[in-house]
Length: 458
Picture (cartoon, one colour):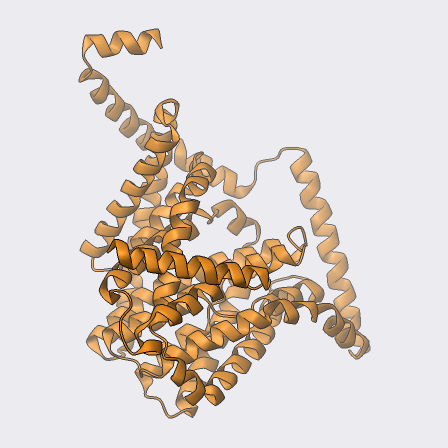
């Protein structure tokens, strides 16, 4: 096991360093490292595949836990319309387009459904990294784009649960699917509300006693506990990790936990992407290059079209909408997870996995260059638009500018937002106070006189 980990880490480190020097995302380096240590290139296993797969599964949990930690109800409420309309347009549009591509390629319903799910999710990690490297972190469209990515992550986790259920039964039943969705939504709501009512308040009570070591152990314990709860309830482990991340994101310790989790997440995420690369047969890339190119074009054109339309319908300016659409032109971690799920359950064609991974690599490589084309494309579209459309574009610019000024005025007066009011009401519920007070009363009653005197001195 130590030998396997050594081979993985040293190969991933060297290759990712080369990709960093070439100014390419390190995720691509991890995938290439997986191809190098995989069983297909040399015809034999350099590392134990089962060990790598087990570590990769842990990596998925930590990645989803950290994605959940980045979720903020406040941000989602503030960008509510853009997030919901934009994400819904992209997801529904790409699902329909992906399913159509699958049927056009003569795939059956199950393969087409999995293919559609793989194509409808942009990569949060790659998008935010590309925006940061382009120096656009403070741009106006970033806030809406981030909210859309968060919403997509939530839908992706739900899709994982639904696809698992459909694949196990090997059938697509409308009534059964709606029932599963209803159960999932209710379960998510109960878990999230109960978590918000109890966990943030408990962490505030014990905050003086939480050093970095205790906090990270407690956070991981809560994460794994929710993972086991999700599995016992018949859902995927990924759902549990994501939900606990969402709950802890509403605590005062969210940024601290996120900071402490970063090294652990980076290590296991690297192993996960290496395990993705190990499943790729380089010869298949040559065999399927026309399909890889076609899928890449579908992703780029589809994401630009639906991303721009969704953000425009959500109330953004045309320029911001196009900036969002042009930055979403790739697929990433969730696509890999869904592809791995299909392969693991044996319900997808073996050719789909290398095609999806290769398309992800290609679109990720092209993302920075496509983003640079946003302004020229916007100018071209604006100059060739009809007078009526141009007038509408200008009016939207004025409306957004006025709304931005009004929002800044509210911030200056420290008026609490709707999200702040809801969060405050939940945390100050009488039930929450009773539960917490009862918990600590019982705990203090079990303290010895010596312990109590030490606390009093402290």
